Length: 144
Image (cartoon, rainbow, N blue to C red; front, side, top):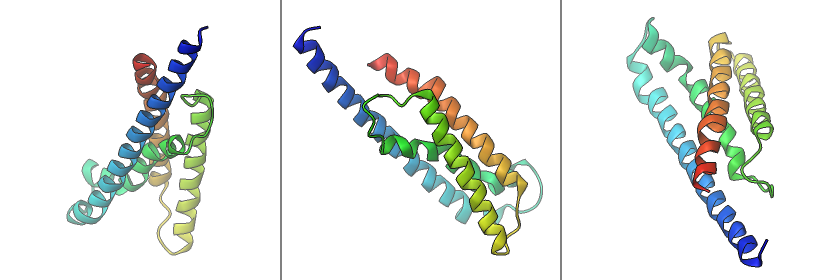
């Protein structure tokens, strides 16, 4: 392998790492704003039963569970890029366990423990893993 090819591979990986981190940061920012919007502005106006109020109730767990595993991409210092599939699965597991602990902490403060939030966190982490393995990683491999 020539020195030019080695050098160009290093630059390409650096550019794609920055692009991946930028997209991860945008995903996190968008999710944060969406949760804030749904929780503070929309949810108070929709009470009762039904699918939409249910979604509004679990969205503060579902949406962060989708986005939070991508936080680890922002702080990835590994030489291997992109993050391996099992590494991202570990990210999802850490996020899921963190959200379970959060639910227990909330229940100790007198807020009702909700199994729907735990289930939404599990679904969110599964969606996040699907996004990474089927869409994210494939996109970055195609453009590299």
